[in-house]
Image (cartoon, rainbow, N blue to C red; front, side, top):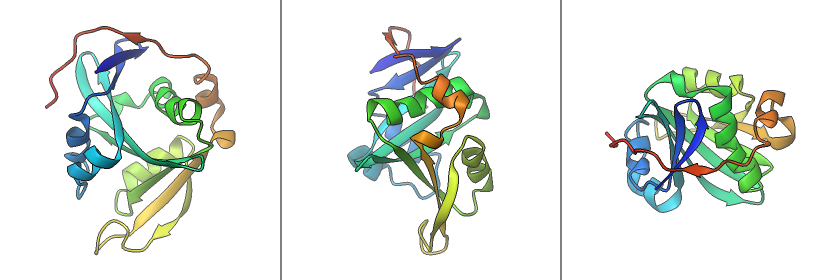
Length: 166
């Protein structure tokens, strides 16, 4: 596993196999086996505590699908969000990031729209037999200015103490 400094007392946790279980445990109906097999993951550590994670998969034709999970909203600074999406737009060279959210998860939909994602459609029963999924997308050339300006630096790995995943 690798830690990358992304801000004051903030680190990005990379290559940690237990992140798939951590993320899946915070999203109702998410299958951890599927995440472990099909997705790459990372975590956000603040003051030595793991507070958020992101999984991504399906990189195809310049599109990638992501999922966020968090225990606390304090992870969601512009700097942290920019760094996570830097990996998708710059490192993976994607022109588009897609996310699917349970239609009942109004808070997550509002959050994603607030950082620039556009609501694009509904997948009927796409979150299981009893719930629709909302599709949101963010195009690289439509990313907010604050996000783009924070994507210019190339991050550097650092060594630091790694917290236990709970």
